[in-house]
Length: 205
Image 1 (spheres, rainbow, N blue to C red):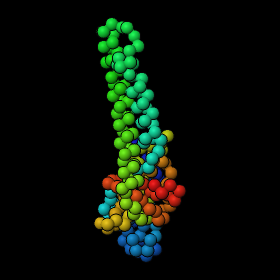
Image 2: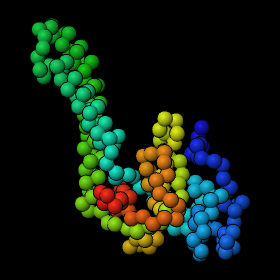
Image 3: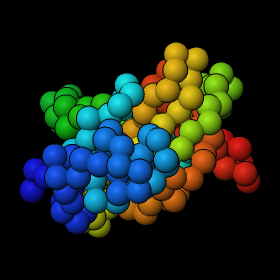
Image 4: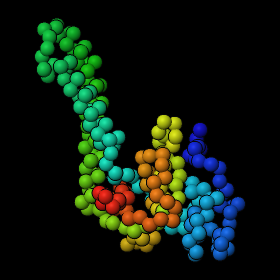
């Protein structure tokens, strides 16, 4: 159960696949650095990258990273207000009121925590949108995320980017079980700090 490739087929490790079947070059990643051939037998999780590898966080706006925490936080926060005595609803004794406040306090804290999380994620997404730098890259492969959706691991995409400091790999969680881009295909990525989003032609962010 600890295997991060739980839902991926077992593949050969780099010791078993040492050379490109097309040009014979020594393998350093899923795609031959000399002829561009995709080596499908090599598992992304097992590779030592030829360039620096940076773990990025997703700056893609969706229901689960902003909408759900906002709704969840609002419900918990608003539901706890009457019990905390902010809006008087009963004439109970002070002892009863104290018990209700103590009972409601964890719900308020959970609600406020969820709201702060949603605001922080939205702030980060807006930072990427307004301040991020667009870089061109090539999709090199996928690996399983530690987050599962209906029992199936989500996917992280591995992209080789051209940056101001040279070529770098990034691993970006997609928030889905689908492999959204073909291996060896070109993509544009907008980056800010350690947050990133793959650009699309429709929304451009």
